[in-house]
Image (cartoon, rainbow, N blue to C red; front, side, top):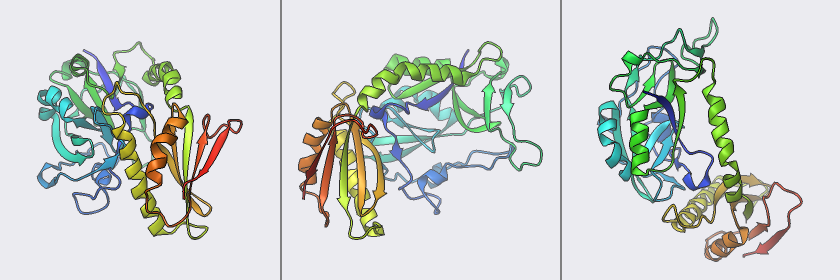
Length: 327
């Protein structure tokens, strides 16, 4: 048996996450993301159950319809309907499947309720807080040792010592791979040679993907929305956010399948002096320009709208760029 850390693919723009920070809390305070920050740093923590109060809320984000795994609060998995069909018998005994509505269809937040005591605390290398700290759970675990006999029946779980992380076993991983589900990142944490840091192995795997990821993000296209004053107002920021979500949806629609060409995505948004800025990146900025500028000509924005098309990444001061006034 093997134990692996599960996350979504975080460094590939084709697998962008959903945004739960703009969906209302089902518990009545804060955001939906806050609802999953379910415990203080005590070893006695218990997962917060949500099924009894859950309502299928709408969440936004750049997720494309082919993506099978996203996340909430960095760790809690969010599955496509395809993934739930494949993994249901492994998921349901270990947590709650909570539906959310997205532009890409219905997805399911999985609230992991199975807290395992299989971690061998004495033989693992765990960064616990020092004396006097109110926090009891670990800052992180560098080296894992599990008690094999306590892993029976495990598929997806958390451990008491490191609350946020989600772990799966090799049975679960094989199921994902056999079904061809995408968006999953697995990093083996046990068994490993004594003293081997699993994060070092994970970093090595990320480096193998860097060349392809760099190509996907290689060129930039920026949208500049002029504001009435030097500092954007709350109303302008809210309107800019709506426009950004429309843009995200437009870009996602260009790639209905994982095998369709990737044109680009929203990389960042920020406030500049007398303007709001939305920055996109993709493999070819001219294709982004051809897609986005007709849409920009139709938007309702009271100030000037301009674009900058970069023949490389915008952080590279040596690359050529073309500025265009849209309105």
